[in-house]
Length: 220
Length: 250
Image 1 (cartoon, rainbow over the protein chains, first blue to last red):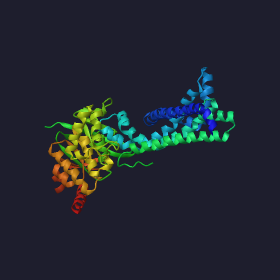
Image 2 (cartoon, rainbow over the protein chains, first blue to last red):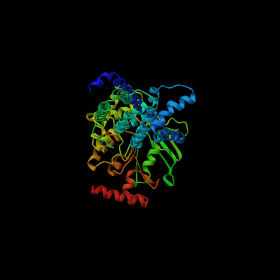
Image 3 (tube, each protein chain N blue to C red):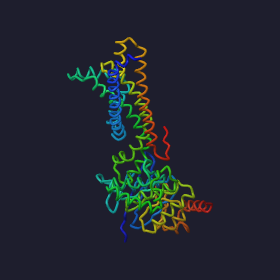
Image 4 (cartoon, chains in turn orange, blue):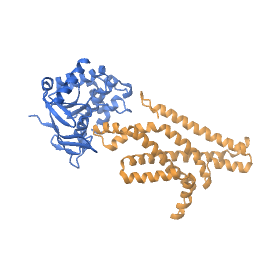
């Protein structure tokens, strides 16, 4: 295993890329997914149809195809260049938003009507009701689904190796190619994924317990 | 003569083929307490929600101190802030403490500072004798306590009228008393109220007028004693008999 020390910098920079893309994707997915969920509930027919098309595209096509479209097709069409890291941020953000929209909308729908009416009765606007009453409860409900989304997204970032981005899996491939120590290399890479993903999942579990509404056991 | 605070004229609410409220006209004057009662599913709640503009009437008008709320372009949020509403199923905000529930409207609608809102919210909680429970979440409170917070939440906004939609019907009999006590105190203070309630002893005690509601319309109205002695319509008489029998059993 000691030979891996020589490549630590490579592993570390790959790991950093993986973490960056994952966190950015999750964060962008959360913000955009929330906006899409609100748009889907309130936006009327046209907006809601557009949102559905968006969601179906990202859920209904392979991630690799999405990466190719943003790495090859769109730059060719617009005659621009996008580096593979930026493509990763965009695609994982847009892709995750499509999934997170579903989770957030579901959570919002489950607490929507009575809480909304109570908020309106105080004179809050619909928008205020969403911000101060609906979302704070929906976000708590969505954490378990969110933890799944994180888990799946973190591993999907390995697909970036296809468009030449040097993330964690691609670092492993490079090392394996140099050293031919395939077994140790990939075992070590897998271990890194396992450790960091487990750590974040554990952190989300703790967060879920921490923000749980006292006395109210939210179960999905 | 006292001014009419909230009024509806020829109000209709139709859901698809179901007529929930048909052609109802009703006004509540300053300091007046009106009690609405009648069988479940008769459209009482729908009428109450239309009056508070929480549900849009299909036809007819609602006036708050003479200002028409059913015209387009009216700021309904502002109007709703002036009308207190207490729900049958309470509907506290689950993620906020009792204090947080009462403070939300003060902060976000009346735009009070945090200190000011907290002071007023605590005062409202004291009025319903829930001050000690200020830091508890709804799920940690009993039904009766929750409903008292619900009343405090409406009260704190200093509304011109409070509409209470069967405030005790989702509570166990032993919890009903504590809520009724609070309502009795509000009545003594001269709070303008429209109450949907089948607590007949309470109704008789506080109501200026009682309205028997059935199949989406006002069947009969009059002072409480009228219903306890000689309701005119058959339907009201039968309903009263049943209620009185039930009360006697309780």
